[in-house]
Image 1: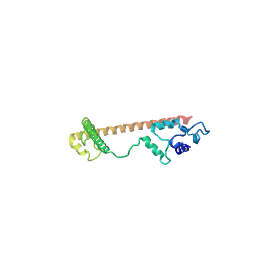
Image 2: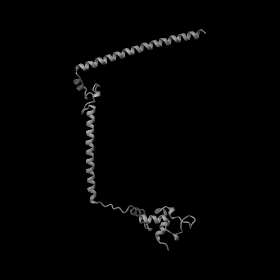
Image 3: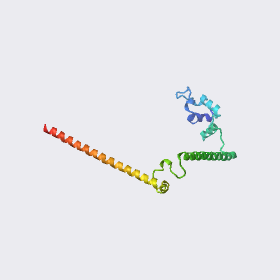
Length: 195
């Protein structure tokens, strides 16, 4: 008579192995009769690889199989784990400190090449007024001096005058074009109105 474990394996082939591993040619369904169970090549290979027994208990059979496959790793805490964790924290901390030093050095070099210092704007933007009142507005007036401010004021007044003249010129040109358009329209009405 067949032992109970092989019957449970035949009764539920999906629990341990795929159905294709248990197929045979003796029955119309492709499987062996209950009394004629033979190990499939797949079952033999799995047994050799993972040392899986044919008898898997009904209760927790997957858990047992996973334990055997995983190698029975223990979940016990080892004292060396604490030492390794502490060492890794120290290594990470030193690496972060080195990275911070490298970044700070690169930043300082960049500031020097751009002509910046802490809290100041780049040289290229020194003539542009600050957008916030507390950021450089008063400092800029003190550093530029009275004469430079007057020169900037005169330059901006000249630019405004040039823009006014250009606007008036464009206005006159538009008016002349409008007069030409009106004259052409009158001529077309007279020409087509006479016919």
